[in-house]
Length: 395
Image (tube, rainbow, N blue to C red):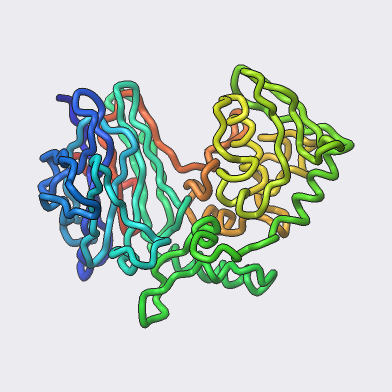
């Protein structure tokens, strides 16, 4: 069976103990829940337990050599929905529900056994066509994690996503406090500190902050949304689906107040009522809820991205595009968490909300992704530092 080497590199000071975990859904022939065992090479395919919240049957915490240059190489089979987890100074608790289904660590459940542990993850899928991996701050940001991908195809440049520097979380929390002093909207509510101290543990995304406190950011986007829908009652909004549907034009329907792009495939109405702030930050509720129409899904992604970046009143009514990346987050009302995360990440790349991979055709990648149809080694570095140097670890 083909396996992919993943170099796990720890650049934290030698005083820190770091553990790694790799989870995912095994692709054929196994098609089941996969967790890598602590030796970094043996697969574990859990059986369905008889009760919820059952412990794992084997140890899956991969201890990393102490930094700043400690690294090991793990090997995985083809996986979908994969995650590479790291925790510092404590092991994570993963549990099993009948299925089997993996109960993953949560930052928005106060009773989760991992809620006070410093942890984070990168995401990936490796199938028979390509490896795709990215760093993610969609739910929260905590550990500095970076990626480097070498290809097995000769003369292919190394792809790197450095992530944030070692001090990045403190910088993000300071910037959130600064934004709070400007608009008093609730940005410091996203900062989570370690119990009994002022040490920053993580910064939640606005969506996860609202999960914790449903009244957080209530009405924050209302005036901006009203301006957008008023503007497009007399102007046309052009959305490039970047797919077979091409550019779709819409206007606010004065009869029902919805942004209306007509009727799409399979007779689905391509209409969007005014989103709430929670709808915008989640990208998945209200008018942005999942649809059976792929065409409508393309509109959802681009509209939600434009609301998070506050670009709908820029660039002549064209999304994505128009104002370009330089116009992102320029309005006073915007996703300042995403703005700050991108400002701190080296090169500005890394998922900060669910549709952060939406970019103008030929535009700069925002999502912090690497991909290759013939991957050699994926290096995942935790702790900050020189990700480019980390890719030299071939294992």
